Length: 313
Image (cartoon, rainbow, N blue to C red; front, side, top):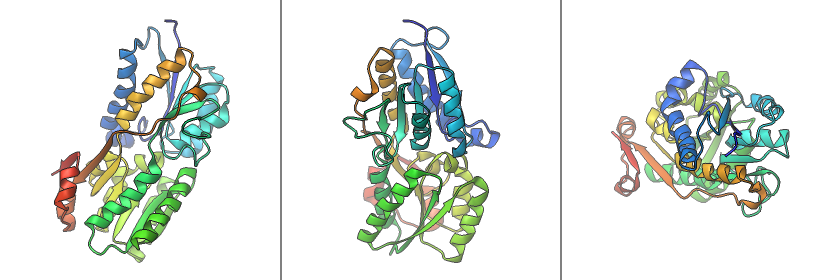
């Protein structure tokens, strides 16, 4: 097998270069990285022998994706792996020629990353995390746990096209559940504390975090601010529950990274991204932080505890 370039363009939530982010995300980083490269090793690839891996990190700053994507394109790489919708859109805008495998893209069709799941068209394929449906499910989970839930705060990144889509999906679910949403958007890490200050002026009964690289880098601080306001909090990534939020529910990212490696192999062997349907998650994880529930004075229904993939005590 000839030597190839294999490029990962991933969100700061996974491969962050700041000291604080590394401390928060190191375990998760290793798991995702190993899931991808571990599967590639099984398929016959080895770094330094027939595989070169270039890594680029945004440190949670979405505006850096375009410059990093352009840098990778100028390197004339064989393939780009992009974690998340924002990274994938930036890479797609930078090249229509270099094949790209996206991992955990929340709404690849709604964000116009691809034409359809079955026929993605162009140079992009990969794994979707189906974030739209999952975010509505998160609201349902909060409704099952928090007594007489009527107001829910939503923390989002106003620079994210995906978050705009997810907010619309949440509004539909909120109408059905008769819950009022209070939206708080940020564009940079230094706006997060002020967002929580605004929340405190009109207190909600729970919080949904729409995760992305900006949020992920600040996940531990976000959870701490939420706990100061005694807000039961949920997000899609298990790292939030591990950091102290009430629960997380979402696709298994490690599983999606492992499956993405198979697409990387197929493309490096000659397959076209347009011929590979975008796959959806088949493995989901519900993580419940029972210690946090007790601190907040909440009782987790036994049926949810039985469904949980992990209970943190």
